[in-house]
Length: 317
Image (cartoon, rainbow, N blue to C red; front, side):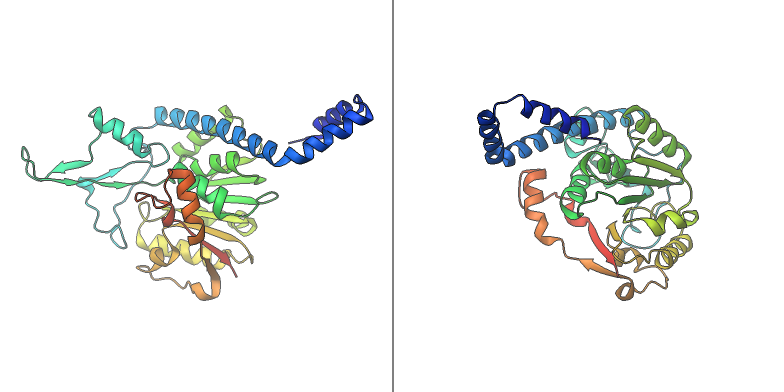
């Protein structure tokens, strides 16, 4: 944002004051600057929350309740942490679009259920398995406001950007110069572009309708790479292995930050890859940020349903 006009107007305002009033005003400004900055930051955050809520509502109106596009290929994992998911009792609930309060409302309205009956007509019920392929709003804020450093002059790349959650969050809650979403599904690319155009975010956000394997130049130049539940439910084991080997060979710029859900260790443990984590990345301990983040984002330092601890951060060596 160009602030040159604002600075010019401020100087004109001072020039209209007497020397005595100017000194008095500048003294007041110096003594109150921290409060003024905090007030401006709070106002900005509230406005950004309103924008985020509005675009989430727009996206909900554009997708079915499970937030799976007509052209998307969802696959039940055969290996790894979610290989025990039963398609019959697994519900796709997009955490960016549907927070816990919204899910509760849908359940109360009979539009969604948290449980399934093991014996039709009985009270023998078990919880359904909820799976999300997007970061929740608290997770997005946690990433940009607590985990990542100052992003001015930096580029954030979200691999598998789907509805664009990480990109919108980066636009609203960070100073990153550029956010790039790589998405292979054409329907999600079109959806993201509509949202970016409507909310005038195209000055800093770009969508690439591509396979990540064809984005070498973008990956190499990225300062931040986000990988949120990106491969497991969308491609077979051999393709996942190929992509991780590709990332290992391509992500070599020292200092590049990788943000993942789940951890890289858990993700690649059932795969056969050449990734040598000890030679590639250093895992960053983020535990000290959790109490304050939980308090501000959930209202409780030890919020039992917090999903913040599922986010992992690494730095390329």
